[in-house]
Image 1 (cartoon, rainbow, N blue to C red):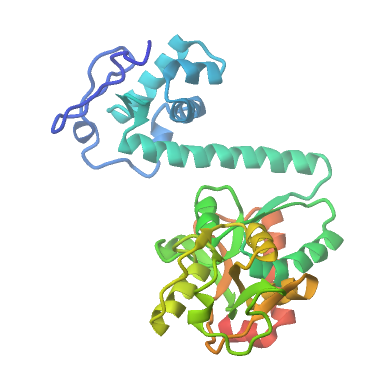
Image 2: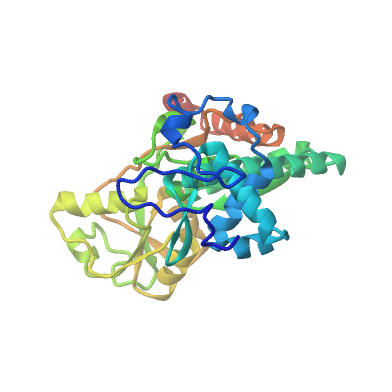
Length: 355
């Protein structure tokens, strides 16, 4: 079956979506087959296989049934049969033909996203079981924004390694929006981050730690370095390197200029990489925004300087973020508890005030 096979149907506006069952007959519509929707345990009653999910992900990636079959090392007739089977389970097509190739329907996108998470979870289970077989004590992947990485994570990792030398630890640094998405997709176990404003907080279990004060950083030879009470109008004359729009630090900088009635700098480079931002600041007259502890560390370790300006700006608190409905693995639980324990011991007043 090629990509124009009748098992993949294009539908005009207003038409009923129907699919072929495994024998090629037109099936009933979704509403006809499942007037009350899917039961929570629908997958136990159907003949859905992991191979079906693998094929859906392969088609989504390759946009072509023939290439998807090659990607899975199976013949195209076998891939066609798998696709017909899974579409028969749901009673409607999961892909439609477009000039760009096969694109998932809305229902297809839902199944691909959640099916991908299920396959990644099973892969993670295999990796953890293999780790225990090799005498290791598990695995954990932690996402973090910059401030808690410096404030807590490095020391917590050293503490855990002393008691659990076999624990495999992976750290991914990014902004909160990206980390929350990776958490939802099952790519990380938990994150030290903020809950993005456009996401439902009920999805997460969140232990708030504390907030930080925002500071601006420049190189030591910058024209404004060493000046007292630099104005926003003066700052706006220089280029900035900031996180993308919507990121907490970027929002605070924008609010700072807006509240003062000063236009934002005309030259802004967007970057999610703190390393990239610091390199640009070190090699030019650009200015960047960082949390206090990060800015202090960078100014102590390099030829960068914290700019002094009269306004004090406090950031939204960050905390330990995980999925509410997904238990932590043993390895992730060890790391999670170590971070909270270290925070409580090191900063008891801050931790009590927020926790």
